[in-house]
Length: 542
Ligand code: ADP
Image (cartoon, rainbow, N blue to C red):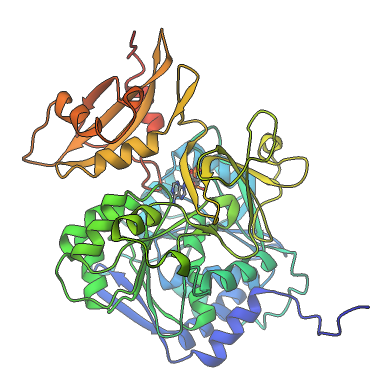
């Protein structure tokens, strides 16, 4: 017997249409060099429809790739919907990739047009002749109020966003009837080899938005004012933009100023209730936010492990701990979120802090298992056994776009092998101990670099710490701790090791300590262990 419900495809038009009819008076703001620019969802929706008309006027193919090279802004949000709602595929380019990676991605995705912020044109324009399929470069002028803006190049490919929009007719949308059609794509940040393309469908984005809004996931509500500090080119700003549009939450988009004072000013001045960013962002913002009156209700953090000490500092000084989430570009990205389940709520503050330092519970509709990397055998959730995390679900990639390298990432029974290694508690909390490529194998046993870093960053004089493996004649690999000490403070190697001694097994203690000025960061602001490994590639220990 079949169910007798209506067959309505899960397409982004539905999220867009809801905002257009219900949320037209609600605010959408963008920070600019000359102050916060304000619009409403009503105006945004009208402009988004006209932007759909622009894509037709430019002759973009029916499923053409529409690239963006842009900061978080309300124009970027127009593109987020105009491209998929007219059947095209939004392709968010990471503005911080190396030039060769940008051209590789643009050519691989066959982008036909790139919408670029004027402030970023000096980075993009020198690459444009290597972008073989790009016919148009549409410039979004975000430089009002900025001194010394270079003139635009004279070139027939260049057009002005606002001029095109003013001349375009609104698009009726409603062309997408197949929910499995591609809506957007995003490439992994390519820390190992060329980036790989992930293609999201309308259905996956709609389901992911619904899940993101759930109370025990990110809990997005109509009454929220959301600040996605996480870039709209980094794994879809973790789904916050579409979830906000669906829920009717107001949004404040931070533009180009991602400095701690810039972010703090928005949080305090705009009445932000939900903000999201990688740990390095919150490390910078914390001292400025401490003790200030604010409306924050949820501080979302992911992308790399959230140090317990950071979350605790926020709890003590700002009044709320960090909500940790784990995922990857391939998982849209939300896979697990660390809500405290009610049976655990009466635990001691310290136990709760340990719990919040885990990556949390699998989100609804996400299946998760840990496996023995060599045999693929499923391992128990006993809080002790570690294995590779594999996930499955309606917003998880099943293959990469036109890429042979994917075979290793997808199992024969249809799960995504994430390359992350975790322990899972009997009640489902996932605790990442490492990425497979960052694990340190000493004398046949694994050492968790994440755990060592967590302990190091809990020291009051240590601001950043990253632990990498260095070759050892006797043990194969041994840990090397790279430590950044607070300005004005000083520490010796013995003090660093002495701090760890009571906290970890003796054979986990780093073999050596390097004091560095800063941990190098990846294009999305994570600690780049690859750069550290390159820098200390000459180190060897007995
Ligand atoms: P890349 O793989 O190039 O870094 P992603 O942004 O897709 O690009 O990163 C996904 C990876 O980031 C995950 O596989 C995991 O290793 C790491 N990660 C994400 N969130 C967390 C978290 N909360 N704790 C620890 N690691 C995380």
